[in-house]
Length: 303
Image (cartoon, rainbow, N blue to C red):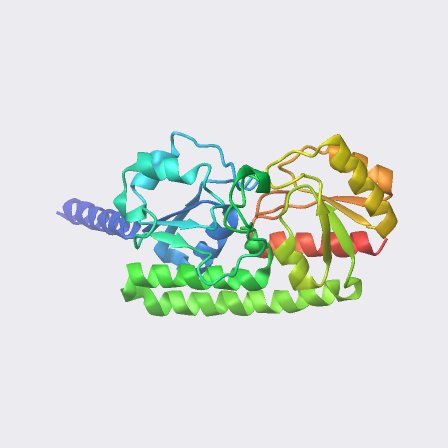
């Protein structure tokens, strides 16, 4: 009799744990920064998977067969927006056959809602580049705009599970308080270098530069998604020398050879910076990523 009661108790606990696990909101994010923000807001009520690991090009995350069933079972998909994921996400969503996640539906969470894009092209033909047709989508490198993403994620979670609204709101407020303290710290760290110029490979950094008072001088790419020509590199080196540009940023998604050559020819410091958590070691969270970026800039500019 005691054995039967014990087995019933064990079964009850196991079923309860299974039901609790099943009750979690299944969220798929395109990028790792959005995954980190979702985990912070959703807490114990969410199960989050990111399609990216942090080392990929945000415009070209490789499409894996495993992504299709993942999206098929998801309750929400969280995206950067402004067409950032246009090369891989639409095909994955179509293959997943999950109507909840289609753009315009409640399960499609566009974190760019409320963000005013920079660098919106006058036309969307290939002469303006291939990957920024609706404006620059790299606003997550401005931590103030990341606050907007946090709010959009919170709104979507509350809409999906209103019974947990108080928890999501509490988590949101706690995370934003932490983020605001870090923003103050990061502004202080870069304040002595206001007006400092830098170039990068891809056009990732206009929002970051605007937020922290730096000057985004140029890109090594000719235009977004278009490789540099020899003439462009020659002109870039010449203007960098004339303007005394001290920093060349290389994102880990791109080869080192050309950025290193430009840095050597101009006397600039080459720094390798992540564009999302996981892009370089010890940057597994959004705050850790931004810490790494800010202090890498500050250390290089002190030289």
